[in-house]
Length: 288
Image 1 (tube, helix red, strand yellow):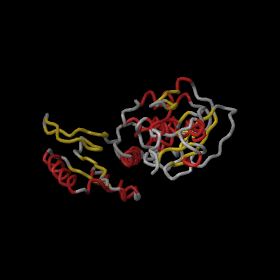
Image 2 (cartoon, one colour):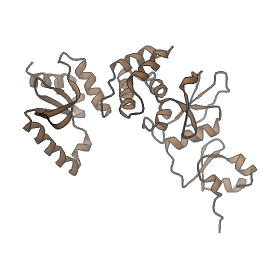
Image 3 (tube, one colour):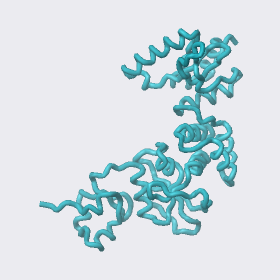
Image 4 (tube, helix red, strand yellow):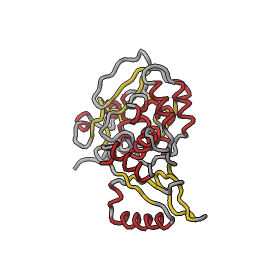
């Protein structure tokens, strides 16, 4: 009958050599399937769910001089820009020994002191720094999506993110500043951001994002985009709207919007693959 694992090793990642030296485990026990190896000499009990945050914590156990940055930092702030299997991004001080380990994306560069933070005991960056660090390495529209996601999460405000972008130098700095200028922080999904970018770059009049439809003084519904003068609303229709309970609520909501004298134009993911046709149909609905 095997002994239960030491409680000290059940809370999170640990160094295997240290556990053996302290007599918490033998080298043979450490090789048992009860322990999962995350990085060289870094283990966790097999009952602990492997999340991106857990792997970020393990990365810092592996490299105590590391700061969790980029999308991994965003995860620590509660915005899922990386999944459990995605590489953990860490930044090491300039001149530190290079690291090539599976599951890690390692950068070596100086980080301003005012960008540094500790989140749940893990050395990381502020949410503003995390936002611009991710966006600077992405194509422009993807960067706008990230900025919108971070702002919509409530973890950051748009103006401090723009200020952080102005501090950047080097590769990608101009692109991330443009992404911050294009972001509005109002979109409730990545596809809403992409749809807004399509609309504002078109010849159509700019819509009002997250417009609140009213019937007289009574609030009716908030729509993704609205042209109040034409009483036309645009709604992005994601797959979750097809769920039975949501479907019924959506139909009741649609009836309320129409009763207030508004028309609703639905956009799907397939429509975004044919932007010219989508804009033509929207233009027709706007009487252009």
